[in-house]
Length: 453
Ligand SMILES: Cc1cc2nc3c(=O)[nH]c(=O)nc-3n(C[C@H](O)[C@H](O)[C@H](O)COP(=O)(O)OP(=O)(O)OC[C@H]3O[C@@H](n4cnc5c(N)ncnc54)[C@H](O)[C@@H]3O)c2cc1C
Image (tube, rainbow, N blue to C red; front, top):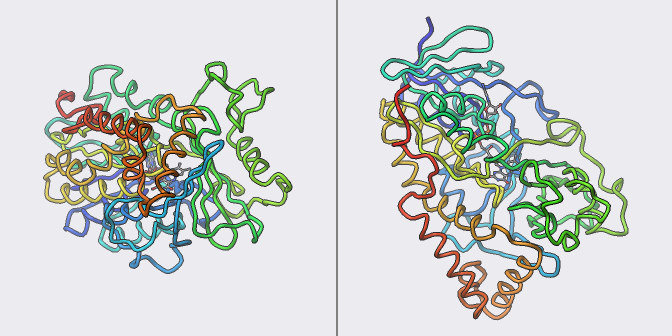
């Protein structure tokens, strides 16, 4: 019967850093990654779907210095983010949050990054089994937890770290053993808790390529925190993507004529790839789609990839049973700003470090101390913009622009503070949302909700 001190399910950023952190502290650590084929990786590996943008202060949050990355991982240093609504656009050159990183952010090669993270885990002594799928976990109150693999083999581990991402293929089954019936899927089921995110790798004509800017089109497609984006990569390649809630009904969209990427003949919400085609012809009306060829040797399939992104509030882990849920699986990521690698890395690191010394009971308080401010801000922003339509985005960006044009300030919050009545109203609504989330109230399943298996 095989045993480990720490078992980790999932080999994305959260799982890999958990494995490295546990193994480097002497724990017998085994990581299982089911293995996903990609065009840009020779063998199977982690899923690695990501627009792969990192903002300045995320660098500090994830405690991973990009100057230590192998040379080919960073693709572009960023100078700004542009937010475009139907009739306004705002360019932010600072996030306005204290950071040690000298640029606005960077984009990176997520596939190479994930491979490097797993190599670091293996070098630290973790046994990283790529291509091994965990089928089920049987949770034990007192003894080790049993992991049943797709092969039928079992492994027993005292500490379990769930890093299986927003699909939660194992996390949901574990939670079902510890929560009242239906609670886990109501909170974290994929269609309620996730957005779908789709992207294409396309070449942009050189004179139109913007190498140091990420761009987001808000209020162009319906749905809460639904938007297309363009992120610059190496050469003149860009990742062009769309994030939107799963299963939207076009008949529920009010004022549909005001969404520039919807068409009167649409009988249903367009597919993500149709949105991308429409976005390109909207921005570059004189060009054809064939002027932006797909880079077919990238992504999961012929230059494209799709994967969920968690759009929910995070959950506490059943850490008194020596189980930690990390990253996308715990809902710490945010479809609001397409961000999550930073919180995945930080929560994975905390979980691996604690698991190595059999101290997972401290996990919930430690992750809140590390990323609670970020989560609270993200959840408050996502709540603030609930129900926003195109004209709301126009008005927010108009207010922000007014301030940016009249002062040196380029952070959103200070901009709002100086923007007169509209800005004041927005700021006070944001503050109210934040207040409602005080003392960890952004958590939607608390430690006390868990019962014995
Ligand atoms: C299109 C898109 C764009 C994004 N853009 C950004 C961005 O610009 N910046 C940013 O910071 N974040 C972004 N994110 C979010 C970011 O990618 C995630 O937050 C991050 O990947 C979460 O890491 P993770 O390790 O928790 O999970 P994942 O990266 O999802 O890793 C989970 C791993 O678990 C494996 N697995 C699942 N089930 C099993 C099983 N039963 N057995 C074994 N292995 C299993 C999967 O194969 C996968 O490799 C984006 C996400 C998407 C989809």
